[in-house]
Length: 152
Image (cartoon, rainbow, N blue to C red; front, side, top):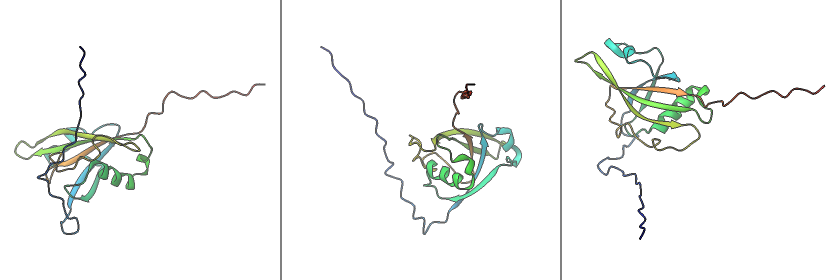
């Protein structure tokens, strides 16, 4: 007798999380550092320094990765190509050690729905004062196309 086992994946919403009234709640300053194809080195965040590629965004703790990505698209037209991947990392600074650590948060792909799209800053453990480090990778171009030669 063969029995089948089915599995079901559900996304659970945290019932303790209260919606934020963006009309009445002051936004926070989110400092974002974007690089093409890679994350910034953790060494660039040491001793109060930051990488030079800073983008400042005013947002709320209920902002999703998709929403943050769309704000970057507005100011950086090169990232708008379908298939561009945004990989998010949280940079947590520890003032006592004058060091920080990176925590992978998730990724989004332009033009595609994904598992991490609706994760909020609050759900991901963001604390005001942390930074976001984003590696932006354009879509792969695939193998080079061979040119058609004219027959003579």
